[in-house]
Length: 125
Image (cartoon, rainbow, N blue to C red; front, side):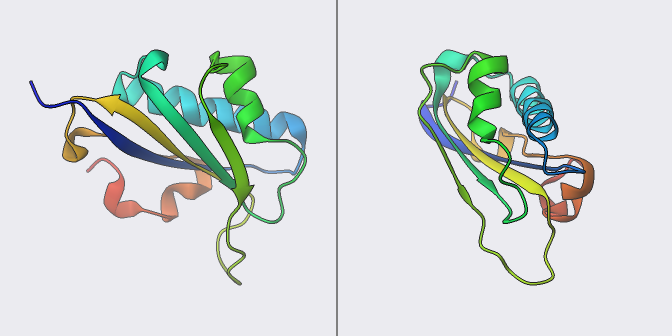
């Protein structure tokens, strides 16, 4: 057994349209996969930070975490990703901070849909 520490798990997903339903469903899909891949108990989540690209403003991703995931006591924050020209658009990113005994190396980062191009080095081999 390792020592308990706060560790960050990264993830991202893209959406087709800037619609509340698309943003909420994609965020739920992303969080479901992060929780499943890392065997996370909601009580171990310290915080979640979401960013969206400038072309997404129809809904807060944190709403999906509260309404669909039950993360009502998890501190969450939403913000805009830096608008770098020519980079991936319609993208939701998250960093979930969890209290865990797992090492950084044992954590599974999740990139779905068009976001798989962002961090190929973090995807399963």
